[in-house]
Length: 286
Ligand SMILES: C[S@@+](CC[C@H](N)C(=O)[O-])C[C@H]1O[C@@H](n2cnc3c(N)ncnc32)[C@H](O)[C@@H]1O
Image 1 (cartoon, protein in one colour):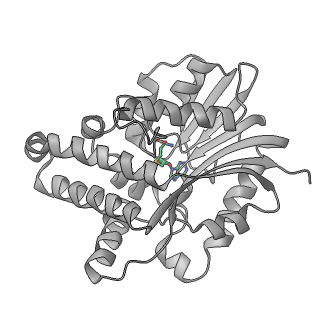
Image 2 (cartoon, rainbow, N blue to C red):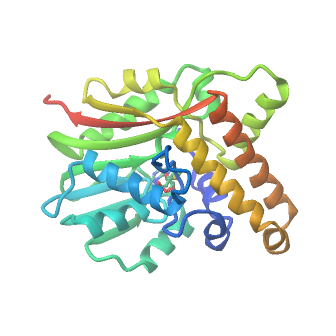
């Protein structure tokens, strides 16, 4: 149904030290929000912008409790607790990530190694955030079998049980858009799906719009393709700057795989093969 625990560990557990070499210092592993007119803006500034933007979309403040579904290394929760929330919970399926989150010792935050499909909150939250976790839920095979909308709807319906009607949900996803024409480009995309993110697949925007109804209403929608192009290009630059260290510590295969994956991402955003959406969703009344 979703990427399994083993598949998630393949995606996120090369080693925390490895990701520290090329992500921003707060370990956001998703698209940043840049001021695209400012060529000097750093990845660190743009990732902070992204988290602050999502904080606003989820209508967080110091009176609110929030859940981050697929919390990664806890970067969104770090920003949210600094800006002010009553309590922030995060769930992830990666063992390395949750260990890292616990070491952060963030006040008012709780991190759990928990599958979204098994999570049962003690009480409802005031708001939700989920950044590029849905990209793990439907495999390419399930999409070919026309299961995608059903699987995404199950995700949105389950999340809807965790807030009261009127609650806000800051949602972000990588999208599938056009298909490349050349065999080599198709192979690069297939490699990224099969080797770097096994079990996952990027949804199409129209599938998300169908799936989030009837439990959620779209209040705002932001397309950020070129922001993710700049983010992945910066990750790629930092990876290449650490080539010798990565090859000696984790081996040639790890370096070559991540070099190919990040290079493919930059091509994919340049050519509209992939996109990025952020949405502000509002829980409808039943
Ligand atoms: C691309 S990472 C994004 C992490 C984080 N949101 C960020 O912005 O850096 C996707 C996250 O979704 C989590 N995830 C995937 N499937 C999950 C599931 N079934 N239950 C809980 N978390 C899941 C992964 O463990 C990972 O933390």
